[in-house]
Image 1 (cartoon, each protein chain N blue to C red):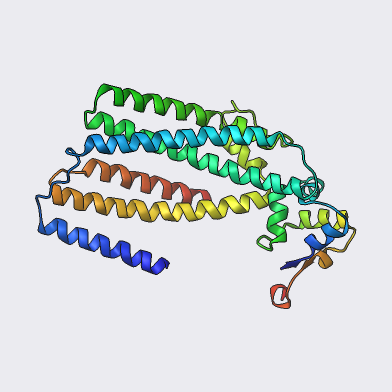
Image 2 (image 1 turned 120 degrees about the vertical axis):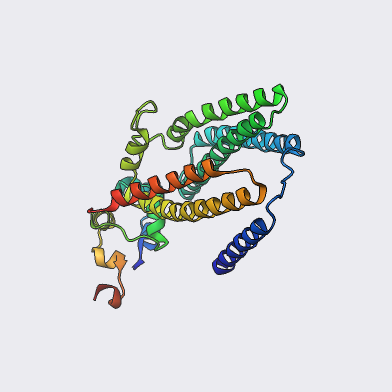
Length: 68
Length: 226
């Protein structure tokens, strides 16, 4: 899974700590997702999509093989 | 690298086993160097206690800093890493000082050394008890369980988020596998030691085997049927 979290954070001038607070997770979790070492649950993905006002699939991008 | 390590351990066990069986009267010079061994443990134990205290003070002081932007993220990462180091020092200090208390008593060291080992053990036990207080200083905004809560560890796990649990699970699983392998190797080493020196380590072997059985049953019971 690829993610645009870092790019979107930079766009909105938000640090990891702030995003973590708004998404009700730890900064460590945000960092793990950004480093693509952890696939978040649907609930966290929805919260992040709402924070950035973007569709989930444009933030978390899966390879064709991963979803088929 | 892992295979080389496994090969080395296998080779070492094979060598020690053969050596032990062929020479039934080896004497390890524990008694002759017991004072030096205890002094070395005393110094390591003291060093680990000092490192634990230094990290405690350092984290407490730095946690109060108010920063923003990228610096806030960097500070949070620093606190997380330093708290992990603090936990490692505290845990290592507890183990080394417990070992020191055992060796100084069993090898009949001078009274001052036995008393010092007891004092060290008391200090590190107290330091371990204040660990939750430090966690509160590191994460003041998080609703951590009360430090005197009898289910503190369980509640701490429950309040961790999915990313933190993912990290813990990976670490714990790795550690569980290592414990299984190393205790198994430990039993073999105790067996070879018993054969080589004639000093039976049967009680230790039984205790380790019981620990191995208990932890594996506990793990299987936890995951079975979930």
